[in-house]
Structures are given as C-alpha cells and as structure tokens.
Image (tube, rainbow, N blue to C red):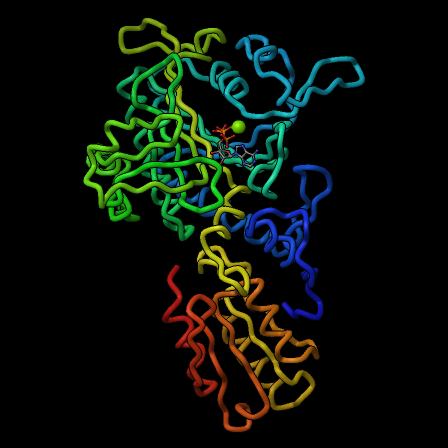
Length: 442
Ligand code: ATP
Ligand code: MG
C-alpha cells in the first residue's frame, strides 16, 4: 500500500475530547471516527487491527473446540420475555419497534438466542460438550460512554456459550475457555490476569474477569506480584486433557478487583509482593448453570434417558475494547507501538526522496521482497519532509521502518528501525529483509 493512496487521516492537533491516551492516539492516527456518543466508524488502519485481533480470538476459540456461528444483531423481544430479562435489563437495552409493531431489540448479549438455537436442535448428551461462539456487534446504552472504543455503546464482542450435561462437565468447559483466554491475550502482546469475579446468586468459583494492568483502568485491582510470572500455556496444549494444573497455577495466587477484594487475604501476602494497580477488563467468563435453560426449556437426555436442563456458561471478550486496551499497554510519547501480531502493517518503507530513480527502485525491490514473504507493507512515497515522515510512522506504530535515503542508496545501504526500542541499524539493502523477518515473532 502506498501512503499517498492510503486513507489514513492523521490529525495534527490532539483532540480535546479524548481523556485517555489510547483514545487520543486512535483519533490522531486516523483509526476511528466518532459518529455519535459511543458509536464509531472504523477507518482502514483501525479496521485492520480490529480484524487481526478478531482473527487471533477466533483461532484460539477454535483450538479450544468452540464452533463459530453468527447470530443477528437484532433480536425479537419474545425470547427475552421467556427468560424474564426483557423487563429486568433496563435502560441499557436499545428497544426497537418494527413496521408491524413487533418489539425488537439490538442485542446487548446472546444467552437467550443461543439457548433457543440449542433447544431447537439438541436433545441428547451425545451432542455434548458443545460450545458455540460468534463475533458480533452489541449495543448497550451505557450511561457514560467514554474512553473511545473502550466503553462504547456499540462494540464488537466475542461471546461463546457452552452446553454440558452436568456441573462437572461444565467445569471442564469453563477450564477450556480459561486456558484459551490466557493464550489469546498473550498472543495479543498482553499480560491479562484472571481475577475472581462475582457469581451472583449461583455462587461457586466459576467466574473470572481477565484484567490487564494500565494506569487508566476503570477498576482498582489487588494481586500477588508473582502472578505475573505464571507461564502461559503453549500452542501444543491438549484441550481434551486435564487443564486443572494450568488453571490451578493461575488461581493459586491472590488476584481480585475491588468488588471481590478481601483485605485480610491480601494482607497475608508478604509486603514486597503486594501489588495494587488499576486494570482494564478485557474478558469475562462465567458459569451460570441452568439459569436460562430451565425457564426456556433447553433439556438434554442423559445416559439414563432422563431429560434435564442443560448446564451453561458464557465467555466474553471485548474485541473492540482490546484495540484501545492494547494501545494503553503499548505506546510511548511518539505514538502507538503495535505488537507484531496485530500491527496494521508489518513493515513501513520510507522513501526519503520519492521520485529519485535510485531510491524509488530500491523501495520497489524491498517492497516486492517483503510482500512475496506475506508481509504487509506501507510505502511512504509522499514528498513530505523527513521529520514529518518519521513522526507519522512513529505515531501509527508500524513495528519496523526501513528508511531509504539518497545518500545510503548510493552506497547500497538502508537504515532499519525497530519501533519498540528505537534501535537503528544501517544494513546493505540485501540484508534488510533477513534482519526484519528473523526478528519478527508471530
Ligand atoms: P463492564 O463491567 O466493563 O461494563 P461487563 O461486565 O458489562 O463489563 P460483559 O457483559 O462481561 O461486560 O461483556 C464481555 C466483555 O465485553 C467485557 O469483558 C468487555 O471487555 C467488553 N465490553 C463490555 N461492555 C463494553 C462496552 N461498553 N464497550 C466496549 N467493550 C465492552
Ligand atoms: Mg457493563
């Protein structure tokens, strides 16, 4: 992609309405445009990152045995009357009337609809365990939409729903999602800490919020510092095997949000290991038993032939919130520093003298070489001054910059800069590709 043709509407001024750094940087880098309070258009740079995050989420859901579906954004109110939530949900739900005066709503979540799908097709334990997920836009009419995409009204969520015969099987389903979440956030370059969350009237220990640490987070969190050193399970994890050792390792040490904080338990941690911080919730997993299956009549017959309400859990990830959350965790004074796995482009090639036959030819050769290897490339072919070019690339945060200038090009050299560290290396043109690709980690 040529920068002269790319739609990346960079803002020179820092937008006043943006309170936190990720919102400011997303606006300045031309990733999003606000259309109404908490409602955004995603411009090309933002859209690419959003899709890359969604794809990692998808791959890890699939690895854990979940199956992707797509439910609609608009739902009939009938299902919500069956579960009793139509009146209970309150003003966060956007209610819509169609031309036949049927009550519809823009889904804030999908427990009812997925339970309806399940009860229409599944009757026997033989189909279990089952986990269905989708990545779909939600609408919640938040009282205070703020922080850009972090607390929007319309936002993209991955929500998965598990179905099992009994609580023991549901616990295993819960553990599969728990482990999938650890892997997902690690692949996004984040350290997300699972913290005990409130299970409401159901009780038990099967609800966790996954929280990343950031000074702008909405919740105060308390944890044992060593939890940050717990190893993340590898890609070879056997999701059909016993995942308890992994879950136990991650839940043995104290970690809680202010809602679940237990002062006495926290004080029992050695002083130098007590960590208080602020955090952003990026995911939430929850076992809720037969809360929806019972009123909605979603039953399965067990080995004994007796039909019982199916045990369910739900598992959310804030896909669009993650774009902001990653920036909160990965930025410096100059702009965004994308992790390699979700950067909008893998490499930026900056032509310091566009129109010069030597630099143009070198840029084209490099671009072809990176693209042949499947790397996405943004070529700065504009005639801006070097300072402006460097600032723009630092702002949008492409992990690698290959700088081609007339003086270096005359000697056959380019300069390679790593965005994250600022490290610069002068290399022969032929060495740039190997230098970049051997350092990139997928
Ligand atoms: P919060 O306490 O932040 O309002 P929640 O408990 O309402 O979150 P869930 O219903 O568990 O959230 O939704 C799953 C995930 O969706 C959350 O972990 C979060 O990452 C994301 N999410 C929830 N509300 C929003 C929102 N208004 N804007 C963007 N993402 C959101
Ligand atoms: Mg909420």
